[in-house]
Image (cartoon, rainbow, N blue to C red):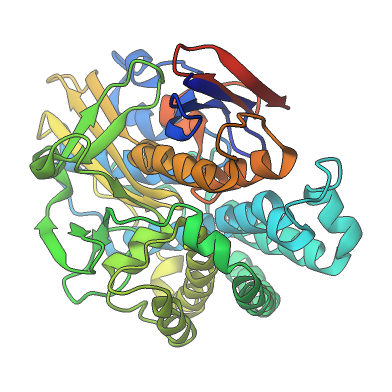
Length: 476
């Protein structure tokens, strides 16, 4: 008799979700679904707001990645004004986005995921968390906290506060970096580099001991999508859309973000508020693709900075063409932290960062604008339509977590097939944690992807073929 397993809630993710594992008549895993069960509808209640308010409103979608929405929103507004922002404003926006990548990746690696592979999959949930990491390795935990703090303080030096800075505006930014802020950032850089290098050294050791996880935590062929420069260097703020396949072959390139609808379709699912974008030429669901750190490293040819490029070469040894294991999202995050720190170091003494020429002023010159940038979790799109008075008539946002939706479903199914004994249907703690860890590899942000508020957590259920719940787990 076919059965179903329910895991509810999934823990150590941003937001609330559950997982359903479907078994066939022989008790083998037939399918798995990652359900997002929270909804607020941010796009709808933006309608009627003045265009100029959008960069101030949309960062409130999430407290973890407000900078990502701030910048994508401002870029959509730039497009409607039909302006090229001053060079100083672009450099300042880039600097803030680098700080966002550092702080978000540090949170994901040290706080949310490291307890799994550093403390052990079999460790009791009471200690397999950031507090357990603090007890087991206080210096490492402190270093991770400090690294995230560095990114947050960089954001604060630019935007006036660490969370929800109303700093980027249509046409540019409000304020430059101050000399005091520049000096403070430079003073913290050496410590940040030390921590990033320590984390990379530590994770190389993790990789040598987790070959099974590399093989079964979301290791399958998909497309990968991200922003790219024409010269192939890693990009995080501008550029064109590029798709590569599992062999590392470029299958679509040079796509203007404003033309994203030609490349990306959005499927609505009956059992989740999370949409399922797909590569339109291949259709749904064959057009499954992944975004985020793993995708960006597959899409680019080089990082463009010495230490990150050296690490990228090591990273690519894990793939034949593209690197396809979702467990290696963690590795990709660490490489992006190093690259971001190197880019900050290159940029921090640029005199343009102190310039007062920060904004291009204009009125509504177009009725549609699309802004795209790389959020820590992947490519983010803000698509606005306005009337002649500059009032929002329609909003569409495509969030990284949604673009990884199909891949997360497949990841859960792959892990469950490996760790759930055939004909059993019982959820064990190690099996539950590995399924959750497969989701955490993507670092999903559910408040962003459904624009919702809610507590953190995930539920997992095992269901028979007739829909009977055989087992369930719920962890807050």
